[in-house]
Amino acid sequence: KVSLPFKQIPSSQEATRLFSSLVSISQDNTNNLVTLRVDHISPVVAQEWSIWIVREINTSLANMKVTESQASIDYLNSQIKITPYAELRTMLYELVQESTQSMLLTKVNPEYVLTTIDPPVIAENKSKPNRAMICIIGTFLGGILSILIVLIRYFGFNKINEVDLFNWTSKLLKA
Image (cartoon, rainbow, N blue to C red; front, side):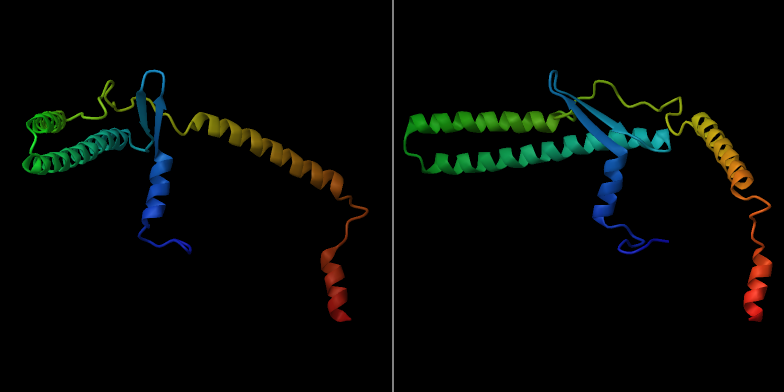
């Protein structure tokens, strides 16, 4: 059951909001380390998601680099065909060689952007929720609330000043 404006099938905005609450990425600028943390009920799912996220980032950025390098090579080849000067053509061939090397390294290396230093592991200990703390706080708050109710009933309603609601409502109905 979902209330408006939400639908049973979540929109991309809802999915992004939920995903962003489960995944956190931080970067340490001093040593250029990126930390990825996935919080999920199941530690197995959290591990799989972290592996998928790193793999997808590497694949996407590698594909972007290959596309960029291929476009650069195509443009340089077209310029080589129309350039009459040998020195300029030599320089363009060197640029084609650099772009080809870059594209080759991108295709060969599966961890193109993000290199895994510490692979994700399945957590052995539970991190959330802390059930013992929930029980202690619940017991404490329940005790305080019950003491307050007893004190309010004892000091708030005297037998002398107590109003009999049943007699009062019956007198109103008779009138």
